Image (cartoon, rainbow, N blue to C red):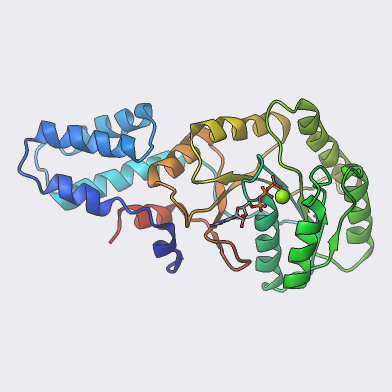
Length: 295
Ligand SMILES: Nc1nc2c(ncn2[C@@H]2O[C@H](COP(=O)(O)OP(=O)(O)OP(=O)(O)O)[C@@H](O)[C@H]2O)c(=O)[nH]1
Ligand SMILES: [Mg+2]
């Protein structure tokens, strides 16, 4: 995960260094650090928790390097309680189910994940179950044509259940290893659309009781608390197994990402770093912390 360090563009090191090298008192320095972390969009509660612990640990000396070491340790503590970021594809035939609010990057991510596994030698099929929006299904079909992955879709207004059913039939009877199901964007007020997600998952279970092996919630890393609250609603309806943070190449602040990880308590499996099929990386907490606090 070397390359994406630049792509994340979220390093806090420079700003923290500036504060640490000022001639101010320790109290003032801590105040400024607190402000910086909050401005980086880490929630106030979490910043307080982190700073209390750091103050305990850097009581006597206040060396710059110590500070980064302790901060990095604190961040790791947040992540330690959360499961591994490894993608779970245990069976011969696995299904990845993609959900998320409108515009979060679901369709693009479905195509990226398909491309990623195709290049690892898997035979991939994609299911365009977004029949809610006019261009929903055709958007994934275009991706499929571009990257060379077959797509099963339906017309606008068609029953998404029948699209998934057709996809499963094809997936089951042919020589495919991985099925990726893209779904329509949903907001928490549209309860019946959320219910529809449950229905799609039930159809999958009829064919493959242990699938989907991953239900990935796509979260736009550049969005604020409101979007995060919307995203949280998905946890009530689906057994989300992982997050994908899309648009990490955008204006995402490091703190937003820490917040998302802390608030959701669900492992981040992939990060999206651009608009092409190649812009996807497997996520690692260590690499993320390094990109945040490293040079
Ligand atoms: N820069 C950047 N743009 C992204 C990334 N992922 C998705 N996008 C862009 O975000 C926009 C929305 O992406 P879609 O994949 O259509 O999102 P969606 O969740 O399927 O949208 P709906 O189906 O309408 O809910 C598109 O313009 C994508 O090119 C990313 O990692 N980086
Ligand atoms: Mg879409």
